[in-house]
Amino acid sequence: MTTDTTTKDTPVTTTPGNPVLEARGVTMRFGGLTAVRGVDLTVNSGEIVGLIGPNGAGKTTFFNCLTGLYVPTEGEVRYQGQVLPPKSFKVTAAGVARTFQNIRLFANMTVLENVLVGRHTRTKEGFWSAVLRGPGFHRAEAASKARAMELLEFVGLAHKAEHLSRNLPYGEQRKLEIARALASEPGLLLLDEPTAGMNPQETRATEELVFAIRDMGIAVLVIEHDMRFIFNLCDRVAVLVQGEKLIEGDSATVQGDERVVAAYLGEPFEGAPGDEEVAEVESAEAAHEQADAAPAEAEPVDAAPADAAPTDAAPTDAPTETPADTPAEATTDAAPGKENDR
Ligand SMILES: Nc1ncnc2c1ncn2[C@@H]1O[C@H](COP(=O)(O)OP(=O)(O)OP(=O)(O)O)[C@@H](O)[C@H]1O
Image (cartoon, rainbow, N blue to C red; front, side):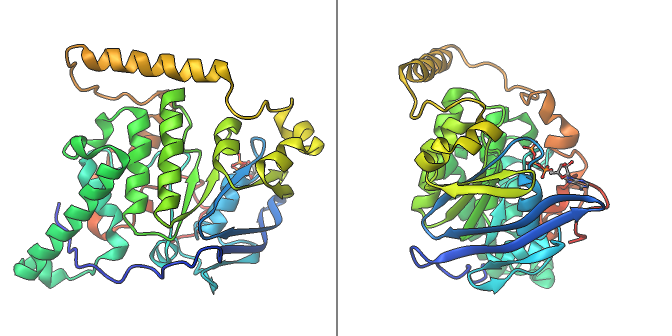
């Protein structure tokens, strides 16, 4: 894969505690169905904010409104005080990156190439530079690869840089999606169900990864159904029910709200992980260590579970496209005809 990798200016750095994302009165209607109704949400720098709600509550639709994939029927979304353009690649260029509920990687590209694609918005086009392949081009390409490798190191995938992404186990595909999102050097990262399909050990590792991302100065907004993950991780949690924000507050406030319990949790959440959960994680870790000690096995052909089948998880035709010139969202498969045309 070749790409012109001259580094552009990175997005504006954030001041701790200032609003990074401000969504005001966001409403999204699909014909007669109002999926999101008048939702306000602020994410400040240095924060991890959770978005929870029952299936069909409008969480992903709201994310799609934030990231330019949908143009909200009403309302406004600002990043760093500027109204976001209704085009997803411009939103990414502005400094908002995301991952998807259904993993969207370039299946037949290597792990490293997938991250390089994510650097698209931080590199100049430079067609002639790429054709002529002068020293400037090679320097820029080396710098971009070095940054991509740093990010792979950060998520723990550097040793798999040359593997095809479709051969990664499911949990690692999710990590790779995060590395690719980070490659655009965002100020805000939106994660849509980052632990879906993960075992307890992988979930705990993802929790640590999200904390580390926040510590890098990137604000995080995360959708997740795993309540333990959300309440351990988030400074604030907003609850959507039938497209409307029911409540927003810290973990204790949200867990203690009777309406949340009734509408979503079903039964009170027990709080921080107890002995049972700790034992479960420790036993998973011990099993993992045993597996590591055992003789190396062949690389799995496709370790993704059934719900991460190639059509969803990793479009196989992607490499025939023009990855270096195509935003990562080029692999999107959601709601034909309903998304913004980017
Ligand atoms: N493109 C679309 N066209 C029509 N209706 C849609 C579209 N996208 C979402 N919806 C509807 O909007 C509502 C909210 O869906 P959405 O996927 O945002 O919910 P969610 O909270 O993310 O659910 P889940 O937790 O199951 O992912 C649902 O009724 C869904 O069927």
